[in-house]
Length: 425
Image (cartoon, rainbow, N blue to C red; front, side, top):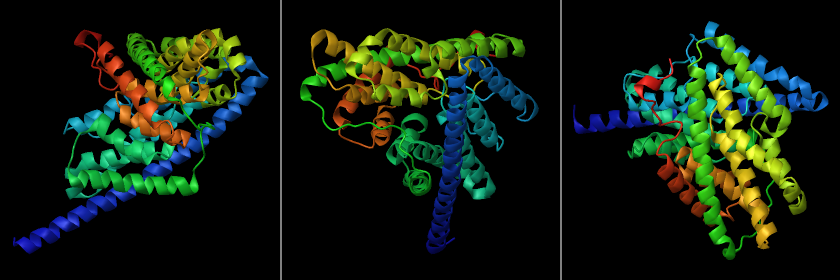
């Protein structure tokens, strides 16, 4: 083959990969955006019914987890969803791939988990589903098999972009968590998918999740941002260890009926006493934004209890068979933690700190500590806030949180591997 023919063939392959990445971005955006829209709609609808009849909560998680178990047993090959680990295995182990059924499996299981009160979010379900789109596209054309990792990362990056309208965070998530590959084609394919996903989402599905009013931050608060980062690191490890413990605990239960009943009853009880734990919890964060300093201090014990119980509710949801991960719980925990720290400092030390700033910074800090991906957390939360005013304090708190979390426990729920004797059967 002469040099000219070689370059022509190489150019065609590059174009083919980029076209596949663009198509992956389209389908990933559609999956993420439609899942987000229908989940929000039905979650809000069922929450209204619970406000009318609080005892309904003792039925909903049972319906959700039972339905997921039935789908898994009779429709999705009786295989448990392992979340992000499935994607990591696909990237790191050449023999593994994400089968096509993972798209509907995670799509419907994530939807059912959240709308029926499971205390998690659809982010991880979306990431695995969209990564599966990338894996599927790499199998449709023979020479694309060589570029499977590029297309899988393109899919998951596009999924995160669509969920949060955060293209930089989607791009960074692929590189911080999944692969350090630095080839030009890999970077170009991820960027292509992210841009396509961003454009589709921005013009057809965009909706601001939170209504933060961030306008200024004070340099005298820097030491307290560091303090928030340290506490966030501890909270992130608490969340990680809770998830690992309850997954191991429920995995040791051989009877599915026992697992379903125990898990749904525990979730129902926690949500009955603390309704903010229902589903993604984004409504709870928006409620926090409206609290006055006096109201926040008057309800500080309740806020603390929610902060303590959220990791437990999330862990029980995932252990009992729900589909989801730690993205939404980390944002929820961070918002509550930020408000609590700010309220306590203001009340006892008269510091006049800005509560909404601490909420936003706390969200990024806990997420950073939970997934060990500080730059993903920084740009994702800035996109959520639709404001880069807090970039510097978010950067400081997120890096501190990640360092503290890694020092305390050098694993995330994605990277931890149980010893052989502890593995879930």
